[in-house]
Image (cartoon, rainbow, N blue to C red):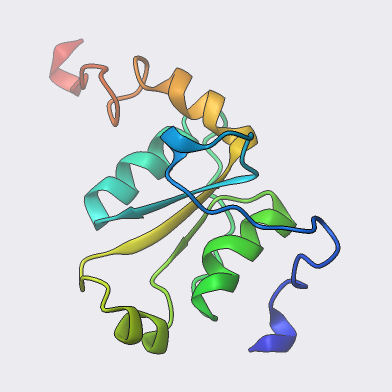
Length: 129
């Protein structure tokens, strides 16, 4: 499994800052959401609204690798369940998923909210035409 994962993000910085996004004093590289499946669905739909391309996912591996390192090294949004040991040791709620989105993708995600039905847009059905 380790041989198939991306290289760790060594040498990119001399420190890692983890904090709520509203308290960030510096621009983050990755935004990590702890979400339930419905919230993950909405965020991934908003993230892919403009290009329609499903992100390449890396769902297995250590929680730090799948929720932080993978997105840093690939620039891809990633959805992970986390690994059993981390989930159990940190006592994460069973319904929590880990969604990491590179900060560069956040602007388009936010701009999709009024346009996309996963945001605020109305859902058009076939019989509406």
